[in-house]
Image 1 (cartoon, rainbow, N blue to C red):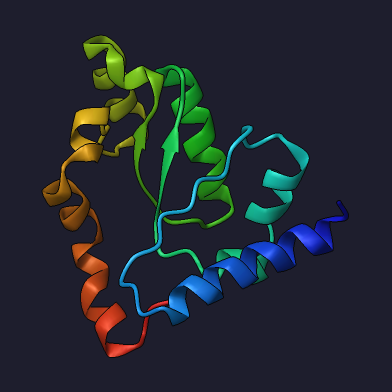
Image 2 (image 1 turned 30 degrees about the vertical axis):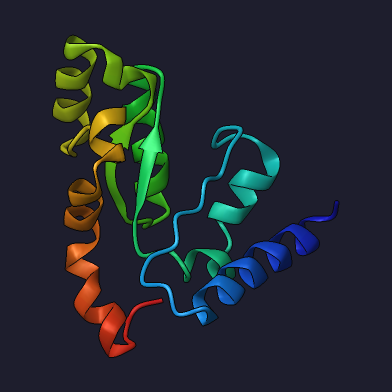
Length: 132
């Protein structure tokens, strides 16, 4: 499908769910940063203006560092790192060190309190209507 349609569908989806009155939308983009449509979406101001924060999933610390840097160059708000690297204590330490971000394992991401702590800085903006 042409990128304009992908972009429109993503923006429409976010807008539709947002109108339902939810506080937080979790949206997964798959296939890696170099996948054409993913790279285009994350380079699209129309799409990224809807993002308040993201967690980057990587297989290892080096991939985490590269992905986080790719996102930061585009001024995207990366809140943390996760993925297969979160299964290894060594990879967790390395990724946290090289990205200067928290690393979230599956158990943490599955905990409601962890989710609340991640979005807490945005809740005031969300409730006052200032967030995306």
